[in-house]
Amino acid sequence: MSVCANACDSTPSPDTSDPSLTQRQGEHLPAWLDAVRQDDLPSLHTLAAGIDRDLNAATAGLTLPWSSGAVEGHANRIKMLKRQMFARAGFALLRKRVLLAH
Image 1 (tube, rainbow, N blue to C red):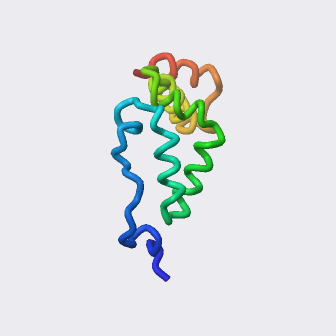
Image 2 (image 1 turned 30 degrees about the horizontal axis):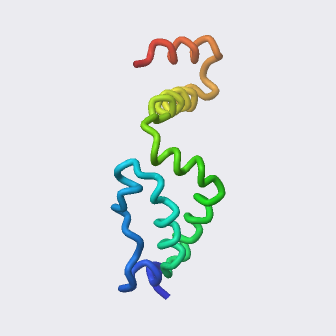
Image 3 (image 1 turned 90 degrees about the horizontal axis):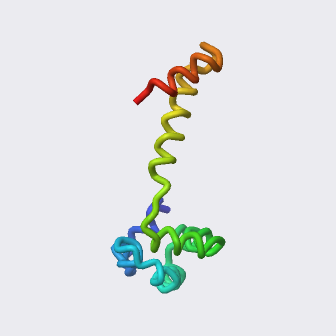
């Protein structure tokens, strides 16, 4: 059986350009989740179940103008530096690289 047997069929799928996903209209998220549940794609059902576990946070993320992107970027940069220095130097050098890196 093909890997994309479910994903490649001709059944309509929920619109991924839904305004609730692209224009900060999180109040439309429950309707989009209902459309996902009615579709015949089990992997999207799993996604919908995961979003349902914390629907308030997902709605806020799609509605509010704030983003944690900058913080996540700094955390990612620090983790990358830490991986590069694994078993090479102590905390003092890691601290120096984190403070001096752009």
